[in-house]
Length: 140
Image (cartoon, rainbow, N blue to C red; front, side, top):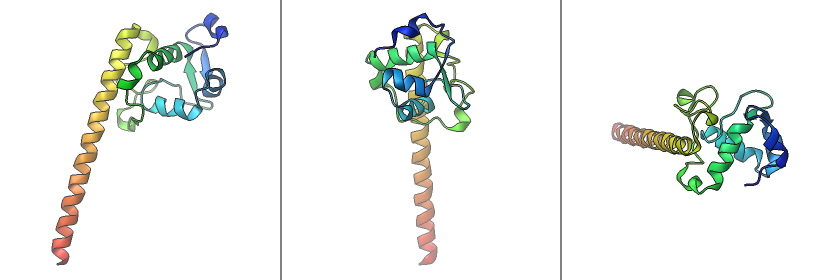
């Protein structure tokens, strides 16, 4: 992924909007939003939503170095599991860790949450089946 040359001179703490990122890189705002809620791109809530440049650089590296196949991009981190800036537990911001460590941590956290939510869905379906079975027996 090619980042604009003008971003090279900006500090990592510089705030970008999703619209600026979309114009500069061609990544749609909806993809950025979905990846933010999946924990892959930390964001600062508000209007407009902001992303730190340093975090976006790490996100771009993660998406373009072959690790993206290990990430659960369709994951939606539930409200109870979210944190304020980065929605992943143990990842305060993307620039706090070295890049390989950060990628490993993001893969681990998203995989953990993915499995947790799948188990939750499975248990819910099982409860619903039991409930439906008992309701049909009572009706008969």
